[in-house]
Image (cartoon, rainbow, N blue to C red):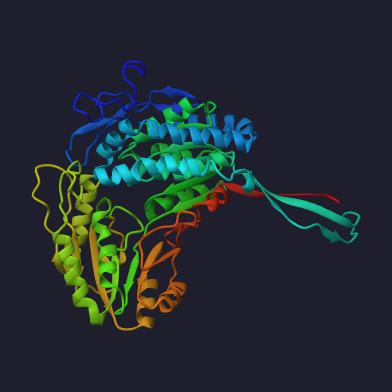
Length: 503
């Protein structure tokens, strides 16, 4: 079957994506078959095949890196206005293909329709349009002239200069499975805006929409080689990209373990790194907090993509006086959440991404019981005919040394630990090896702000789980390296170059 026979992402007779559609790599502007054939992408809710993804080899990845390197000189010299126009066009094309992309993304991620329609597809278009704005303003940083004395190096005088944000070069964007299009757009948008070329390596679990996105870049008029897409079932293609001498920067979102591996490989080439890794978000709830707001925010661990989000408040630290009330409220909230078919309007919890991941989550819950914790709710596998479902689970009577308290689970599991005073809770929150996103709930905003400043984490939400996407995003400690988001995304994908001249 050729690309002319079936376009990637076509809708089959059932109304969902066509499992026989052809998906190919995008290398140097051409759709090419992968050297390692294809592999099946499975719908986590139904366990049915969604489509077959191309399985790239190391040679395929290297060819993509070489194509990006060849395209870089010309692309880096394009005007900011040209790059902005093309990025805006991609955003518009995503909107135009909304009816096609939504069922495809939903089927391969298992996300509920509400999450897919609100967060998976439209946010990708919005991010491309965001990075079509303000490019020119981020190109240079003016500095005042300096009066320099004569030295053995050069005559003195008034020396002018400018700090220029130069593109890094070829960026390997290795993206996560939980929000494939949104995460990819958050990397590609600022990278391309700053004049870099890109090789995208989507997560192996759900890459089909990203293959389709590559086709939209071609349709939008991006020159050959500026955007390349490689997909691989295992680590072969990704490791080849990281090690490629043509790749200048790796932007990765995913687990800390994989981030460590990327860092060790990239270090030999002194490649630039942007790593957004794991989290074990502490949610501090003081006894004066609005309990309704706190419970609503915490229960989003269950309600928002089945807890498969690194910023989730999975580690609840609650002041002892309101511990029982909070637990009772969370149990009541869990009982109202429907687990099941993500296509049904009233479903809140869909499946997790794979059978392997479901088993991993269940092993964490079993370890909590084995180590002496109590399951206030959940813990049993939902009685459904198919799919990789996990019930909303609340772990109480937990101590800080338990595995379920320390390690990232990335599923619909919340653990509660009591505390007595402010000093204790700051120490508990900071005892984690992670530091991505913490939360503080208190009626005393001054206290909440003071506590926030003591937390060793890249982000803190006070009385809210809402985000401001113009702020820098990233983690402390094992949660990553670097920052993106808003204008800081432009900074992340550029190098500072100083140019001086006599005044």
